[in-house]
Image (cartoon, rainbow, N blue to C red):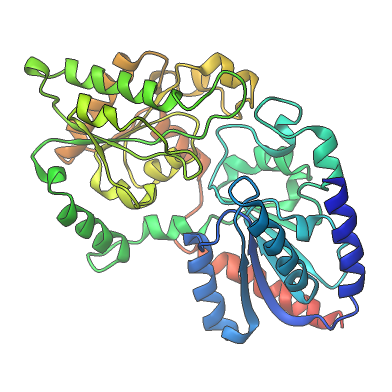
Length: 399
């Protein structure tokens, strides 16, 4: 990390002599594929500014492909050093390590609408986080002018995680919230759901559908078997609710993008488990009746859509220690928090049946989410684009 920091700083000194273009750059090291948030924001910005003033530069994370990461970081450095406004959705070394010119604005649009679990500076020197030495050497999350939060409930956690004052954090929502809140039969979300139903006939077998969406586990005590174990426990609990082992609901598994590895033998052992590959969790929300999650912020996305959420957290004590939690689950959502698979499944099944029948849910997690996103309505993409456009105008005036 120290060597990379020195190299990037030296290269940036050379690149800063190049003219800075009156353009917006969206950079990410989450994936080579553009996220939904980026796609929606790019569309909005190109309509306002024109396609020639918006550039996107993505790379795979170092944990997936170190060669692509290094080459991608060099490309991102060139783009960052020649753009007036930079948007990132995570830690991007090419943006945080070099010294930032005064006429450049950096906006952190984090890739999650909220933060159930701690991250960034909140969990340094824990098994699930970076070391403080590594964070300081890599200037983790430095150079931001604004940090965008999905809702006001995330302000304190984001300020701590990025190590900034709270007034730097602006709760504008995320483009994906617009995706979730859009209504009408012709909206893309509804059309995508119909296609998923058409391609997966089991979803219309008359049974409610429960989606299991766990977060990524890292650190001591977690190996490649944890997901299979938890999934097997939930499937057994679901089958126990039915007559002679016939599960009363479908159980769909979707994993974290960086860890969705589970034993395929489970699909044969538990016919109630279904996998819908190559489909993002957010697209499955409209075809499920309840969600079981844990510490994943995808639970917020489900709640925004009115999907009841139950939390299955058998490792709650361990997770509270590393990386830690921003929400005291046992205190703030006690009736939605379960360390026992049978209790989690029983609650989720009852809510799935109610939701399948057209009834709304107001459980603990739903009530928490309403306050977490208080005041955030449709229009997040435009609010963020307004901030970008104002920042671009200020950079032009500073010339």
